[in-house]
Image (cartoon, rainbow, N blue to C red):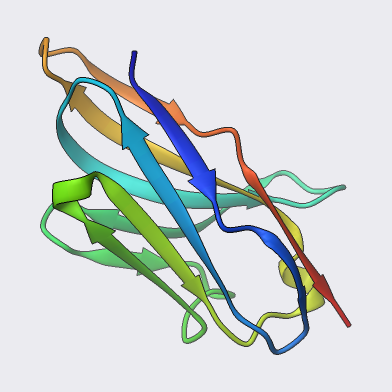
Length: 120
């Protein structure tokens, strides 16, 4: 069974940094794209960053210049390095992957999320 597991969340003061990880486990043939989303307490889920198979990246306006998405393809891991964090960044962060399993089945998966809390 293929699954995504996020880690690295926690409590940090404003101006601090965190590095989130998203690990893909299971019979994975290829990962086409991994996105990071976040959801605050009273907000819908919003896009944060994406990285595609060729290495292309995309960021939300709020993430540009502060967050960096990267991948370790060999380990099926994706990272979100977050710097200069602000209280407004407080949210549950989810990774979402577009991947193909060894059996040829293509699917899009969500992880369970990791909480990031930024204190002022």
